[in-house]
Length: 322
Image (cartoon, rainbow, N blue to C red):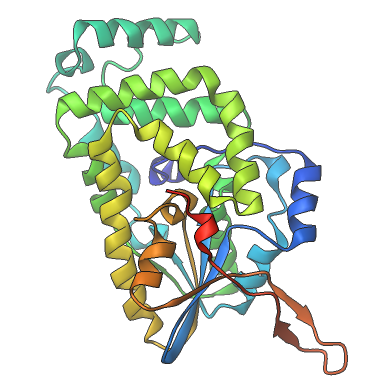
């Protein structure tokens, strides 16, 4: 349950792709990882795009993720679960009505009717979401439907590496708190929450098609394709795009810029959708004077048996067509 509510997966799709797609991405040495360094030295950040839910078939992860992890002194996530053991209680306390009312109070009659029809169509009681506020109902339905396709939060990139770091006793820190992330959704007006729920219900019809598209784009490092899928899901709720993507990106760039000054090597894992576009992390770092390069990994130097970096490709404007 902690992983379920920790992942704000409403806008971040996940799914399964064939082993052939995985092998091709590995052969090309190209996936959703960039190396960020300052012009005047300092530390290094491996900026790794995450899919928050994956399937068993999506593992093992691309080898470059494992290389970046091994090369890093510390892991940084959107949220470090160890920072707050009460994540589930906090989420439910702000996402459930309790004795305060029911979801029909915050939805138009048409939206409530559509929700009940969807629930009945999936074999659930029509009133199964009555105790949920619209934002949590949207998130819960989205994650539940993805889990029906085999996706699991614990198999997502961030959860996978957090568990690995805990086993390896590698330091882990978070960019945000549970309270902050829950507040993004809990604090919006009920009209926006209704739009969010209706958008989720619409997306359920093509979820089994969108899953493979998203994961394949993530594996191959096609950040533009990831961005298009996510922005399409947000087109009816631009207010949430500003809060979920744009404003968080601005805060993260400032935080990570300070972290780089510590002079160590960090693996920063955040949703891949945060990389895309003019307001994405890659462009924001470039505008602040950082060097941003697609990372193609390392290979052993035969004579000395150590690792040397190869094939760093600057993030060119071809990656940003909007």
